[in-house]
Image 1 (cartoon, rainbow, N blue to C red):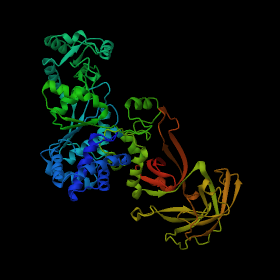
Image 2 (tube, one colour):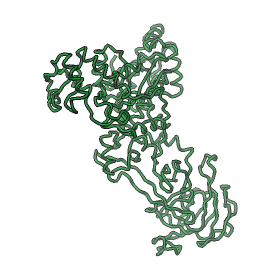
Image 3 (cartoon, rainbow, N blue to C red):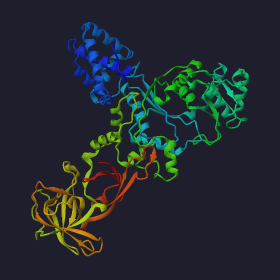
Image 4 (cartoon, rainbow, N blue to C red):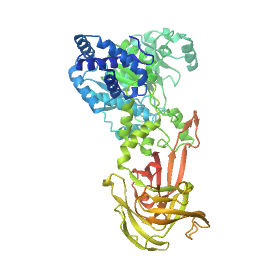
Length: 621
């Protein structure tokens, strides 16, 4: 069989399994369309490239259809047997998972009830969308196989870690509704890690190097061994003990005895322990010798019973070292599986790029709505259930994942649409006043939409009335609100610029014939609030007509509000100084009463989250 370029072996295995199952269920004849649909249902991330996938699916189906029904059943049984001793139960549960919409493929060698996964974040910053992908995949697999999920803080670099970040990670996971079965810190096992380091020295798997950092770097690049590598076990143990009380920072490191000629430079005697003279957020100054991630992760995964260590493919070259450490120590090997990182175009996830932005005041903090941190997405109005659905829709693949942010927006829109109340606002940079003439003397007369006026009375600006308007066009449970209206409104200039002589409808109110535009010195109502043109119109009735609809804010009910509109933070790798737009607007007064954290949709503008009284952050259109 010819495998199409860009289709990996895992995809081929999935196609073959689905095709065999389809064939067995249909008297030995699989159908290309049914197999394709099933594969996309299991792996939505393949939808974009499905055209390139179809020739391979067709070839696999044709090959399987040439087999006898007995041969098909035999091969399908063999494939499913590979899933582990818990195959029968796993098969039923995975089928149920597929029916519920899970999109993750089966784990290799997974036994129902025995799978253990872990999420090991370093508390050196706030969690971001990449962390969300990792932790959701880890938890989903643990739940799919009725196993255990561990949250383990990889806190072995006190120079970069803060207690604030532990709390931020826990808060982010709670928001995502992620519930670990065990929460632990690598720093709690530091004494145990020391013992494993000493055992590694005893089996001649590690040595203490006192060469200068620049020499070590140069030797590793050139594949040259240093004199420290030839020391005896006794001499290395003596140097190891000195790391705890005599050597200073950068004077000595414990290195793995790898292969200085290896084409995989990771294996060229990498650092396993180093001296860091800095206070630890949990342990204070109790320890000064700290393991690197390479050493700590392999040992911790093994002793924690992790069966499947899932991590982003940036660590792929480090797998050789991960296994080499465990093999030298004779320890149990978890299975390491990689997936692609998740980030958005123009939104950096790297702390190396985010921290300077915060320090320079270019963003407001870790929760700045332009950032991809969970705190920022939460502040922006992205719902946790939308993030989970988004992550699962991408599937488990090593193919580079940099989807457009609009994909997450589309899912979030679906989540929030039914519960977000609709409100009116008019941008001040696109605003004109409308004065309506010929209003009926009895504004409480019946209206065809059935809502009408609550009451009416005079004011210093003329006759006004309370109008009751639905908060949502289809969700009656969100109730109604009352808006005080008179004869003057703020409306978008762009809506009436070419509407002179035409009839329009003020949404949920009444119809107006736009007659003329005049320039005044004070906006037309004598309060000196705004110079500029005023549009005059004549009331033409309440009947709903198929004319242009115009949103409005009553001058008698208006408040000043602000909407922050986040845009792409980086363009072509350069900071975008126009990445946060501030929109000043007139809003109906009800907008000032909506609770902080609530979602609203400003009609014809977008969905926004209430950030503070009178201040909103735009989520998306």
